[in-house]
Length: 437
Image (tube, rainbow, N blue to C red; front, side, top):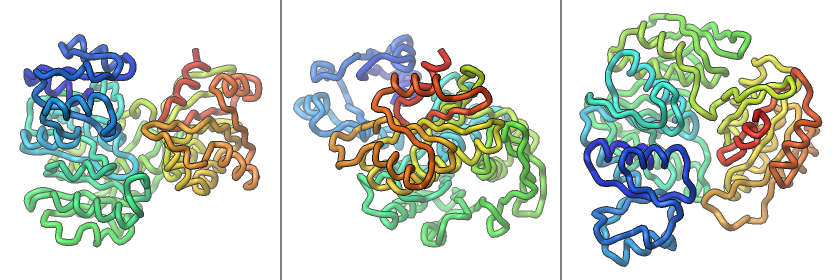
């Protein structure tokens, strides 16, 4: 929401909004002229407001939502507003997929900046090179992430549609994987005939997703069944990938990354396919990918404590956990510890066995309480359930109900040369910051 507020302020709109607490984003918006209310109440909504924009996290019993309805203020979702903004750009780019959206959006952003394309960028994380999550450019190009939750990406108008991968997630909204795949099919159909769909070649039965899609299609993936695929993958002492990218015309070129793991090799291939579609010089693409050091909370080194490294990562789905822990194996360490904070009760209940299985890739796991986010019903599930399953799988595991207890345990038990990853989409990063501080 803060990124969209930036764009609107730049375009001359009057913007107000609210949040539960102040933070760097709200402070920045205030400096730019937005009226930000700390605390959410119906008194924040006044008759002079022309349109009320809300996210999927805001429910119909929210006091501001109710007040806007009572006043008859026109309403739209964040996704609808973003879709309207996309219409103002000749080349809107939407990056979708269950995992990797922020990283690939960031890689694409770095390439466009290096090639001096002056894009407008809306990233789902903090990207150092633009000093935040938004950059307002003055060219034809608008790049944004496209989230499938509540089918919000179906309100978009992309000319370049990227589909990274499709897996089960957000089962508090979708019925099952078929329901999710149907939504991604509908997203692909939004691409006009003169556009392009760039899709992961490893997606199972991707032909079903692409059925009746009128545009050009480019694929990227793990082997030569895709238009773009890697050869000769190696990793440096920090786990960062180096590989040869094979293009549809058979051309081979070596790329070096400054982000770890096999999953980022595949992410980079997607960015290379995108850059080639825009006829960006390969030298710019190579330089941008080499310079990209990741976004905040994506295998982010936070510091060292008592001789052990502290890494923070946003992973909150079993596939993301596996990718992050596999990447960590190429990073120098003695023992790999993971503090995991599950995100939402519905996701924890749906993936209970998968979470435990993925976390066995760590040498030892410490469970924090579930981060509820938008949910209130516990569904009878807790982090202790994951801990119990890890015990049965033979993985050293612990559960503590408070961050303070976790931090005390960590300082007492983790040895020099070990590595600690704090992991999850909630506020588990506070543990990393407390330890480093």
